[in-house]
Image 1 (cartoon, helix red, strand yellow):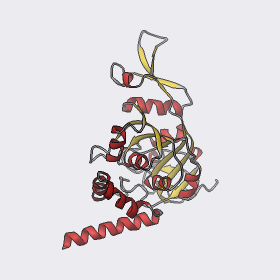
Image 2 (cartoon, one colour):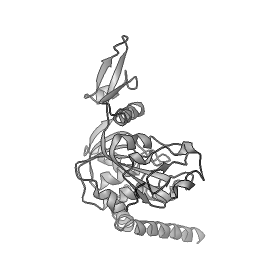
Image 3 (tube, rainbow, N blue to C red):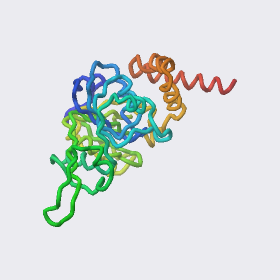
Image 4 (tube, helix red, strand yellow):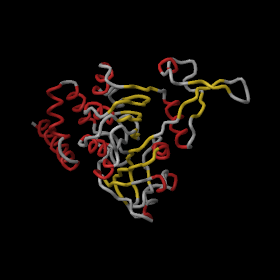
Amino acid sequence: MPDKRIELSDAVAFIESGMTIGIGGWGSRRKPMAIVRELLRSDVKDLTVVSLGGPDVGLLVAAGKIRKLIYGFVTLDSIPLDPLFTAARERGELELQEYDEGMFVTGLRAAANRLSFLPTLAGMGSDVLAANPHLKTIRSPYSDDEYVAVPAIHMDVALIHANRADTAGNIQFLGPDPYFDDLYAMAATRTFVSTEKIVPTENLLDEGSFHTLMLSRMYITGVIETPKGAHFTTCEPDYGRDEIFQKHYVASAKDPEAWGAFTSEFLEGDEAAFQAAVERFHAEKEKTNVQ
């Protein structure tokens, strides 16, 4: 089996301006944040991003990387809204294609199955159709039933984060929910996976049953070992959300001067510099609490 291990920079090198990229995870849960941070350091722009969004969307919007967003929501979970995305939306800076969750997943499933669309009852009778005039309805050839015909959400590149992987690209999710990451991978031309740990193939079942091996190597282009690569979002059971840091992110995002300081401290270096800055941040917090 080929060795698919690569570096963060190698994954981002495949992404070109104008591409459509999918970002797995859900809100502020198991997002491929290390790859997102690497993308922030690139010259790529004018992206169409497909995401059940969280800070991945907020950061890319603030950096001017996103032209169009196809999404179901953008939330930080424990904090309802991402302020960077919210501000950009209020300013009318983004082209938006908003679906409810059922329609969004139907679009992923259509692309994963190499179909141009799939029918669904999700969205029928709602304002989602009025807000998305490109959507069409279709009648069943077997009855008088009518459905929303959701177009396939095809992606050039999908980015996801996983708990474990082997060098060949077999992917393991140990948390409580795969968050449709398997559909992102199957719907994309190329898929890059950051993972907490790369393990020998024979050890993939040490921490979970075969049911946790939800992504075959046939869908994976490259694997990057990135401990804490989902930070500050969750990566259960390896770690939970860094709520203290997330609150700092939100507070900083609401003030231009504070955001400049945040960017300088956490986002201008490489991934190792980011992780070191987070450690210093928590050390200072603990020192302040002790005093």
